[in-house]
Length: 580
Ligand SMILES: Nc1ncnc2c1ncn2[C@@H]1O[C@H](COP(=O)(O)OP(=O)(O)OP(=O)(O)O)[C@@H](O)[C@H]1O
Image (cartoon, rainbow, N blue to C red; front, side, top):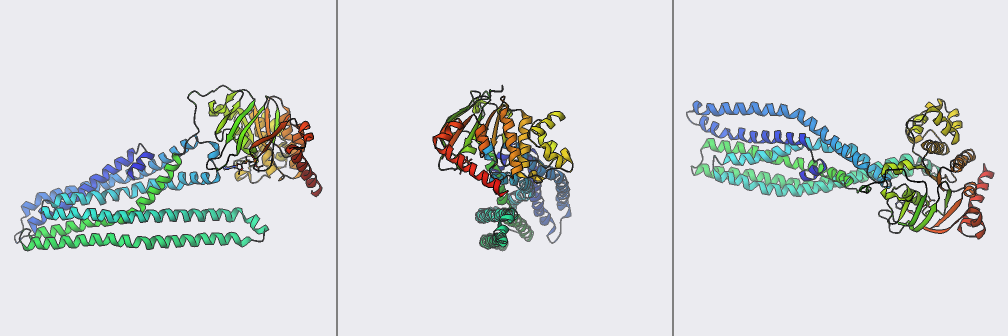
């Protein structure tokens, strides 16, 4: 457990200092108890020998003062160690996150990351300190007591020592069960969190389907499951806890019997027996505390495991000598085959095509054919399995991450906006942009009309994730970012049928403007006939393969996949226009 923690935090300076203080305290506690042997031996006799007891009493008083001073000294170190540990863990997680492929950030992994940087890091920091000290005391104080008991009688010391392995065995079993219970409880708690989020997010869908109560039922089922798991955990841990208590009690009885026997045969005096019994109580008490700590220790170990698993996620491989000069603007896929991590079949198989500099290429294909995957691989969300992706003739794996990201602007459908003003949301694309450049980008993306309608114009806050804007308006912000960024390559996922006609027209026009500028190479996942007609080149994907490729005018006449999809999009569009 300590090894696991050490691997996560290789410089636990404060924690080591705290551990050192706790260890000295624990040994001191054992020695203080040991001083009872000569003190009781001098005082518990028909004629108490105060002179003999005096140096021990003075030593005990000094030891007690030192113990109190150590307790006072350890408290601020404990606080500092706890926050230092949590801080170091968070920093490592944040640093590591920056090296992970963008494709790693699925909703599930984002939730794992949020949990690790908040609850897990804080719990590890708290628990390492709040249970570390008592765990050290519970181990070192009994060991010191065994040492000092040899001064009374080696057989008693041996019996003390013999109790420990039995207690530790019983403790191990209790710990294993506590750990399983903790993992199950965690799973049930995560399920509740998932259901609660689902209840909120799925309300519109559930109500539209007249199933408003369904989400509540699922959440209630998760709560019931959590209760059941909690009760099961308690029930399961009862037997090992009782076994442990029985071992500790049996140990005390054995010490009592041995002391009585040694008293009867005259080996030990009454004072020795009293001292042994006091030592026995203080020996067994911290051992008894261990069983209460073991659950928390395993909960901490599980949290350490979760953080460790995140830190073990392989980062995006960096080339030994990354290319840092801006590459050209051509995009080339050469025999690209890619399977998603954990996937069973390739999302792309042997895909090859080239987008010449300044051209506009439309990607088209049925749902699931691999269009989004192509754009994700170009932006290096993942590395391709076989084949290569080249930008300006340079393999994206050879490019420095910053250079690659500077070369590409991405306009995806699920645009994320920060809960800040429109202006700040645009500035993310180029923090140093002048006011004129901002206005120009907004105009080109037809975002200016949206800004004019907003109560505080450029200074209107857009809400969490951009919730105060419609899907089309958010996409216009994203397009304006692409204009502002002036990247040589623009990857666009044109919104499908979800936009109203006004937004649809605005977004189409904005995309057409992006594409019209021949300094940019545009790759657009197209859903609209107008976008397809305006493209220089079309690549039609089917089930991860290139089904056909060529200029749109020619492909419309060949009666293949492109012609079929074109007709479908055209029909869907006219239907939407009629309905609206
Ligand atoms: N993160 C992922 N993990 C595993 N498989 C994925 C992931 N994303 C996509 N896939 C799979 O890869 C294949 C290609 O998906 P992709 O999203 O590229 O298709 P698409 O043509 O963009 O579809 P759509 O038009 O519906 O967006 C599909 O079979 C999909 O199920």
